[in-house]
Image 1 (spheres, rainbow, N blue to C red):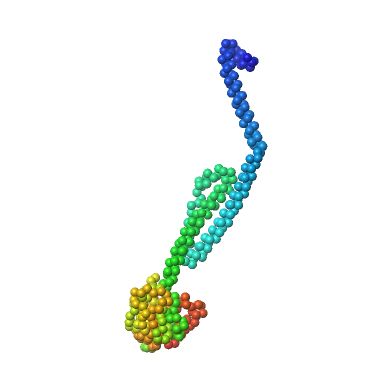
Image 2 (cartoon, rainbow, N blue to C red):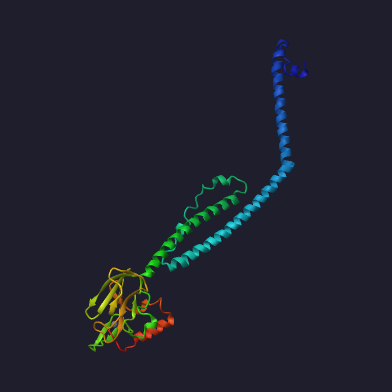
Length: 322
Ligand SMILES: [Zn+2]
């Protein structure tokens, strides 16, 4: 029996020594085991913290590589977002202006950010700030791309409608330039060729030979081909969108009412019928029930010089054919 037991159990009966001794031996053993673990743990921690193992070095290198890759990724996202912003500006300032559409509002473009909890799980990582920022940028970019695609879809639809609209808007002369002698008279107050009194001329006269082909000036439907008091043989096309064109003093028709025509399609031959003082075509453009000056509806035929020339001829107060 070692002294230490008798020291602890100085006053106990010798008969109890064996029993207490067993418990104490167990406690001692426990203490040794605990000490061993504490010491072992501390040494492990010490070596772990102080001594770099090859695998740790590898891990560290990998970590720093990852970090720099993350930074590059973040920068590239910045570049992509700049391109995106450029695209948004073009969308708002060019495409939407041309197609007469409202710009996409900032609320729509930037909706869905600023939630504080979305990136919480990422905040616990090392370098969390960088990871969170990069993830945020990625989310923003994805959202903005989605909105941009929607915007372009809408613009494609608008431009199709615009195309349709432009096809139905009077935009050429009803007589080919090569068949034209000269424009006898334009729109406005003129002296009536028959009654010799001032009268409003609500169309434009194209002086040309008898039986010169007359063309539809836009897509539409022929709604009437009939004799009209003063106008003689007259053809009317309804183009939709509020546009109607009228072709008068004709010789004959080459299409029937109800026929859908396209711009540039021949519809009649010019003549001298009705109240007319010479072979010519009288052409009217009516917008939502009101006569307008046809000179503003030749934009597909005339360049700037041609327009000036047409204006000069149309404004001269020379002979009116009516
Ligand atoms: Zn006329």
